[in-house]
Length: 233
Image (cartoon, rainbow, N blue to C red):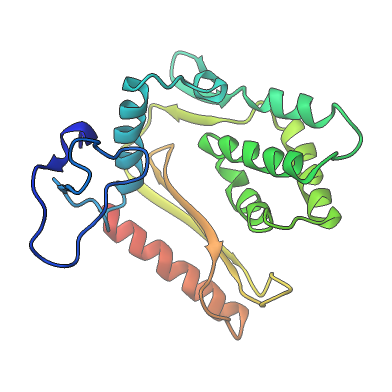
């Protein structure tokens, strides 16, 4: 959707209407409303589609790509392509610049920078998301967990997202960690779906309800994986 062409000249007759978003208000028609050209909500492609649309719009308005946007390294062989995010080297160098975090803002910035790694490092998704849950008031204990995460990242710099030739069939792996969260006793479910040798879909998140046994936690994890396979097929 092109925001510059998204305003209708005229107002709605109903009392309920949507204001123009801050920063994109048309000075000539400040009371106009936005026109939704296509609903994307509810689709799994919605986040990617919205990101692509607004990324193009911001670039057209004079915004520049950040350093992390151009830090993908592609390693090719005769049958395999591996994508590695070299942005991780900047994070590790910055975090080792000092022995302690001088301010809360620096700690939040470090955790936020780690989120970029999930583009190619799917194994870090759950740990980084859990660190982000405490960004509003992080403690020394939370920062110790982030440093442990950084040590793991430093030892796995060669990890990336690989794609290679292979048979065209679906297979899935799933597991659960029963009552692993000490605060709410929720289990963590995880699965990964492969199309041949290539990773196609993945997930690692808490179960919404507390499982009374490890068997129940495993059953829920298998149910999530089965639903994902049915959707892909």
